[in-house]
Structures are given as structure tokens and as C-alpha cells.
Length: 551
Image (cartoon, rainbow, N blue to C red):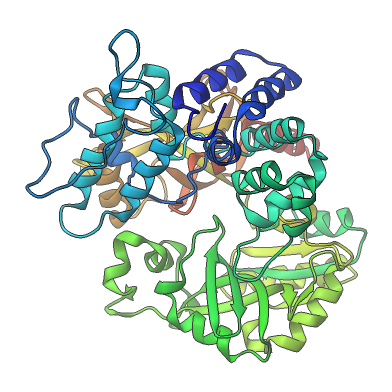
């Protein structure tokens, strides 16, 4: 199939075939069969879309807008020029043999995302709706579902992305580990696939970590206590404060600085104080991993308030907190590249030494090497006393595993927390009358190659402040899918962090489990439903608690 000829229908058919089979090898075969037919540009777009990713990143369309779309596109505003979708790839608007509009080409989809991203200013939501509906209106049901899932980020999940990489490796006849590593350093499977299609397997060698291009962050697994974490890492490890901040990656190359979030979003323009921090350090080029926090009255500012500096909707407010600007402070814990040298594969202890030579102490996360449980516990207690979340316990000999949740990093909090998806909310009573209050909470059931489903774990209204009640009442109604007299059922796209005391078996909920004393800690607008706690995590937590005699 020549470039420019692949259509959304091809992707929808492959996606359906992948969902219809349970075997991983068969899923991979379906993906590889499609990828093998595509030219370089179509391959880049197909790999990105089937991995649940839009190359343009955010395009200004959220769940509230998608779920509120009318059945037909609104008339364009006077003077509006719309992209002529349906003209690329040798057909499009001309339609198929039965007179129905032809499935859009991947080039057309790419053009639509460019157009959505370019919209700004007054009336932007209306213009985006016009553009999106101009394409949605001509799609078959399976194409419609795939595109809306892609726009909403509902397709993005680790298992699906891993399958796409496996399918690409088979179609391109390249070693899967080498392909996966290249993708980790670019964050974009489509970009790597296009290069290999054009240049051959040798193209993989040039996809290493590069300054100014985000690197997928290393993540931590959980341990119930610092003593357990220390034992799991051999009895001696670094124990760091776990800050209640925003994960950032700070890049500098000469005078150019870029700042990326955990999701690899570029937020440089809104963080001038961190750009100044980067330029103050005594090196020409580097990549630092750390957290952005803010302090107020000697204590860390809560995560919810901190998110205002990272929210596009609130950027125009200038990050104001308690009537004053909210300045950010960087706290770094890892150094990945330095003046041309790649440090990721070095042991953690060596990266820490290099970090200490580059970054002054006041800009480094507090840490201590602990060789005894009481030493680790002292760091944990100090972190909590300072108002932070807990600690990270890290193996001293561990490399930086980009894009992985490595066993050599263990996070410990005072109580286990889960990132759960809001499935519904009940109207409140008494002083909460008029507000959506009691939240229905679900964990993600991840099946490779299939859409995520969500299993209910329980309900809670505890921990919700008046401000949170107001915010969620407005927000959840914008993403409603069904309403009854007492309950608003919503599309599963909002994530909330939940603390609890115990996980129990339960016949009441379809997950088979229930949370005891669940309470809301915070909303997580930085996470999508694809980042939510999985049912595999829930089962593992239950087994760990059972072994500890908690049941």
C-alpha cells in the first residue's frame, strides 16, 4: 500500500481483529500484517494511532467537548475556512461505490489534528467542534469509536503500546529489544518505525537519549513499609523524600531550555523560574529528573493547587495562590545526560555523585544511604514531618530504566493509595444538597489489545472539600453518559487518588473487592484513565495484605 493510501477503516479493522482474539501472538500477527503493507509516512501515523497516541500531543479537545457534540456539526462562523477533509488519498469526499463517503486517509486525520491544534482565541471550542464533526459525521461506527477514543486518550495503555512495538518489530524484521529502547528515548513509536522503514535497521542506532527530546521517566513500584523496601533491595539502599509535586524533566542545551512533565508534555513557556534555574547551573548541556514543588508558610503547597501552574485552562491566571503568584522550586533526584555523556546505564550511586557536582544542595531532594531499618525509618519520619508524601527507596547499583516501573525503585507512603477512575457520582444530601458527592470508584481491567474496562471497588464521599465538591459537580456533569434521579453516570476518563485502610473481598462489586474506609486525597488531572490502578495491582495488594494477616 503506497503512502497516503492507508485509511482509518484499515486501522479500525485491525483494532477489531486484535480485540477479537485472546492470544498475544495472534494479536501481534494482526498488527504486523497491517504494518507490513504501509509506506513510511502511513506507518508512522498508524503506529502512533494504534498505540493510542496523537503525534501532535494535546489538540484542545476534552471529554466535556466530545460528549457534548451535537448530532450534526454547527454552522461555521462567518469567515471561517474549514479544512477540506475527504480530498486526500485519491478519493475521500468522492465517496465509495455505494455513494457513502470514503473512510478518511491517515493523512486527512493528521491534517485534522493539525487544524485542531492551531485553533485559538475566542470561539475556539466552537471552531474545534466544527472541525471534528466535519470528520466524525462521515465515519462508520467502528471508525467513530476509534477516533473518539484516540482524541480522549482512552486507547492509550501500556499493554496496547507494547503490542504495537512487538508488531512493528515483526513487520520491520528488527530486534524487539532494540526497537523498544529506541522508542523509550523518543517517546514516539511511529517516528522510530518511519525511520526504520526508510533507512533499515541501522536507523535504530541513532535513537539514543538526546538533550531537548523527552525521555520516558523511570517509575517506582510500591512497598508497604520502608523496612520491606530496604529488605527487597538487599539491606542497603538510598532513601529519598517523596515530594508531593509535579514530575519534571529539565533539559538544557546551551541557552535553550525545555521542561517536560511525566506525560512528556512540554510546559517550558509557563515556567520561567525553572528555565532560570537551568541556566544557572555550571554545565552546557544536561537532562535532570526531578519534581517541581511550591512552598507556602513553610509547608509544601497541596498538589491540587500546584496543578494550576500546569493547567492550560488556568495559565492565564499566572499560577496565583492565596492572591499571590505561586513560584515553583525545582528539586532534582537524578541526572541522565551531562555535556554529551549518557549516564542512564551507570549505577544510581554514580549518577548521584554526578548530580551533587552539578546541582547545589538546596535544589536536590533530601536523601540518605541507609544500611539499617531504623535509618530508613528516620528518613521516612522526617519526610512526613516536613509535609511530604513518604519516601522512595532506590537500589544503589540500579541503572535508570527509562519507561519502566523498575523493581529497584520502591515508593513507600503512610497508607496505600490507588489511582481510581470515577464511574459515577450521587447527588448529596443535607449541606451537600445540590452537589455531586458520593463517588463510584473503579480499577482498570487491562487486556492486551482490547479496550480497557473498569471494575467497581466501592464508593466514597470522604475527603472532599467544599471546593472539590463544586469543581467535580461542574466537571462530572460535562462528561455524563447517563442520568437517573439520584446518580450521574460518567464516561470513565477522570482519575482520583484514593487512600484506604484495607482491601477486602466483596460480592457487592463486580471487581470482587471492596475498599474499607476509602477517602479522597486529591484529583489527578495529570493522569488519564490509562494510568489508573489495574485489577492486577488490586489482586497483588490483596494477596500482600492477606500474607501480613490483615484479613
